[in-house]
Length: 424
Ligand SMILES: Cc1cc2nc3c(=O)[nH]c(=O)nc-3n(C[C@H](O)[C@H](O)[C@H](O)COP(=O)(O)OP(=O)(O)OC[C@H]3O[C@@H](n4cnc5c(N)ncnc54)[C@H](O)[C@@H]3O)c2cc1C
Image 1 (spheres, protein in one colour):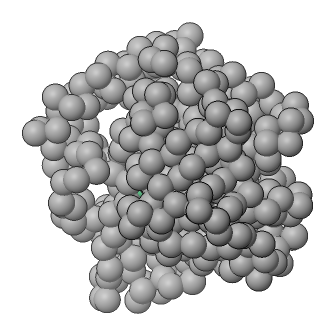
Image 2 (spheres, protein in one colour):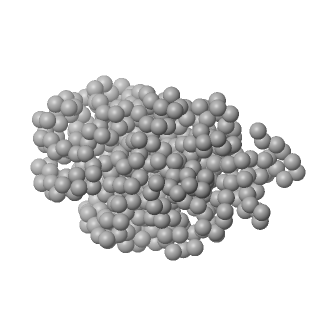
Image 3 (cartoon, protein in one colour):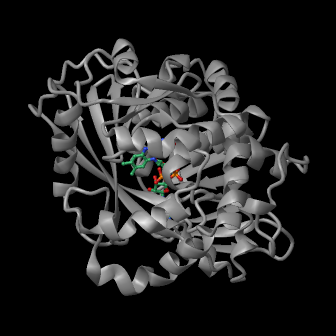
């Protein structure tokens, strides 16, 4: 398939980054007949896609950047058990991102982001249905809905309006009392006073296995999965790109797709595209011995974290830590999740628990970058899926493949353009 000459290994389409986003893109292009290499410095699925909450969260159409988030920040930031923490030494670096986040939260901007999230999320499950059926991996998506639970009656009142709003935005949602919630999930404690039931969402019982199994199918069908770290992408005058790896290997690709998650900023920058990408670090605590008989993702509204039943136990996941890509993990943030979980699922057990930290790739307007590089042919970007990379990967893959093939994508991709930040 690939030949080497003095210019390096010849590659058709090179997908850089084998997280859920890059792997679904590689598979999608392969199934459309392209010759594809999937390249990662690590084994597929070891980045952020390894440890997420596994929630195909199509109901999340209200962007994180909204006025409610901004107004609640002073309270959240003072709470040591709270869902957000900032490493103060990182504050000067992330200030410009925070400033853009505040602008994105203004009502008319948040409304535009909401429309763009809906456009992706509304196609998410159908895209996964196609992908998982095609690859024989339907066991990796469980369609059993999800619950957002409230402990305080005041939260229910405060969110009564958002139910109507979500319905208006096409999200299937039902308001439930505490008892109705416990009928659906009997393991939940009496603390739960009510909640929202989202019958049309789904979850993955093993997000890492999802990526590795997809990569395996891709490999079995003739795709190349290669380990290597890209340090430079040089567009060639006549088309295609030279790609240099950190061990001096050289690839000569007809086209390159950059899907390197939270690490995409330097690769975009060396091509001349400045983008305000940062990371919202998140944590999980895996509870292998928690026999809680939970059957769907449970999102705690007040505590802002998710509990998802998985093959290897109950996964508690969430929290946002603004500390960049280099700071050591603070696993107390993962441990905090257990205290929260115990309040809602008293049978939860910490025995054998494992901690994990991952880097969400986040842009300040809560939208990813999906699109062709405006100044170069043969280069495409697909990164920055923030809290929704699992949810939006399969639809992103279909959109990128349409672009590569010169087809008009089903949705307007302007809201996701890398140029939208006015920094090029
Ligand atoms: C705690 C937590 C819970 C979450 N829960 C959910 C959820 O329930 N639902 C949901 O939809 N999303 C969730 N997310 C978000 C989701 O996990 C991410 O959006 C998604 O994993 C991003 O996928 P990706 O493929 O873009 O990035 P990654 O999975 O990080 O993959 C990027 C890959 O690029 C590789 N790479 C980077 N630089 C280079 C280079 N120069 N050369 C070669 N390879 C390189 C990395 O090794 C990595 O494998 C959660 C995230 C966290 C942290």
